[in-house]
Amino acid sequence: MTPLVLFGGTFDPVHLGHLKSALDVCEHLQLSQIHLVPNGQPPHRQATGASSQQRLEMLELAVVGYDRLVIDLREVQRQGNSYMIDTLQELRQLHGPHQAFILCMGNDAVMQLTSWNRWQQLSDYTNLLILQRPGMKSSANLELMSWQRCDDPSQLMHWSAGYFSSITLGQYDIAATNIRTSIASGQSLPEHWLTPAVATYIAEHRLYKD
Image (cartoon, rainbow, N blue to C red; front, side, top):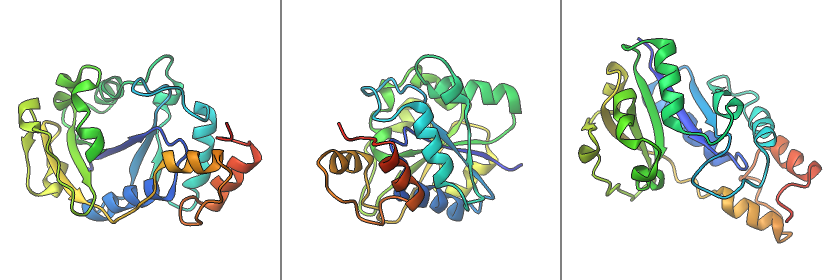
C-alpha cells in the first residue's frame, strides 16, 4: 500500500528549501507524491507575517510544475489553532487503520515535540521521518515517546504507525525568518531563496514590510 506522507509547515513564506526538502523525501522513498500541509493558525508562534490565505496562495504558486507536491488544505480550512494530531485523526478515519502514514519533521521541530498538543498520541497515528541536515544528529529520545527506531527509512512505508527513522537532506541554507527579516530591512533576496512567482507575489502584496 502506498504510504501517505505529510510535510507540514507554516510556509511563511514558502521557499526553495521547503520544495527541495520535500522532493528529497520523494527521492529517498521513491514516492509519486508528498502532501504539503500548511498550518492555519500555528499555536507555537506569534501571528504569521502573511495570512493563511496568502500563505496558501504562495504555496499554490510555488508548486506549479512539481507534480509530486500536493497541497492538503484541511488545516487552513479548520477554525482555531492548527494541531497535527487533529489532522492525523481525520486522515486515519478517512483512510482506515492499515494505511501507512509518515510525518516528515525537521530535526529542530523534533526537539520541541513534547510541547505539541497531545504529543503522546502521535505515535498511535503515524510514523515519523526526521529530516536532518548534514552533520546534524537528533538528541531527542523518541523511544521514550513510544516510537520504535527503524534504521531503514523505506521500512516506514510498510507500517501504519509507531516507528521512526531519519534521512539526511541536502544543505539548503534558507530560512523563512531570514527572508522576512531581509524584506523588512529592504535588502534584496538571493535568487535561490524563492521561486520567481512567490517573489513577485510578495512584492505585489507588500508582505513582510513591517
